[in-house]
Length: 296
Image 1 (cartoon, rainbow, N blue to C red):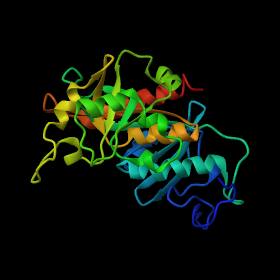
Image 2: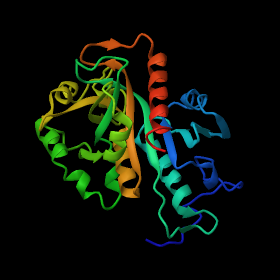
Image 3: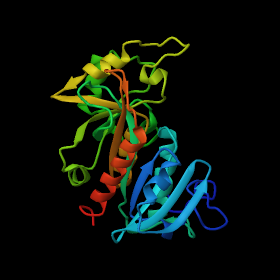
């Protein structure tokens, strides 16, 4: 790969900020909390002791501040792995590319990404309002197929077993599996209140997650297949739309990542949280406490 990047590859705003995320290198903390909803950014940063950066461009809102002496950035990604591709590539560029010279830096900086999202449980024993930490992301999105050095994601035995057990339609993207940072998982979930398991990452909210309104599904049993899947005592705990891309890109870029989700719905039980905002806020406070104690 060439170390000199063209203007069309690395787009910089007139103020020196990177194109979509709209922040400059010095405005990014080494620890970044990723949220889907732009309105969730101030719900996180309100707990900071001090706020130094506030930025917004389209659906991407970024706040950087400090809590208990630790510097943290919280940034919204919007929904879906396509947006994750934009945000993680740009955050990595802020850390590992000289934006003025448009050259790769000689020393690599490792970032820590913690996703705080919402999700639907696929197992009856996982109650709404609980927190799930994703040990692995099972991706149906195809994003990793556009990058080199991803053979390990597609050769993972879990992905192969799922495709076989579910009779995966070959017209879809091949399922892949990317793992979280084991170190980060231990540091952030050394607590009995957190459920762990495989998170399935879908390409949409309706058909790709087995929901139907007016359209007919290609596989009406998809949700049941996900719930019943087992591999060496591992199971798929929940459905969402970002984790596999966060884990895959983080692995390729040499960063640490963990996805935490508040369960707002249980698909098997047919239940939905009566107060999801309070449950999400509890997850935010839990994550911030762990980030500012275990990860200093």
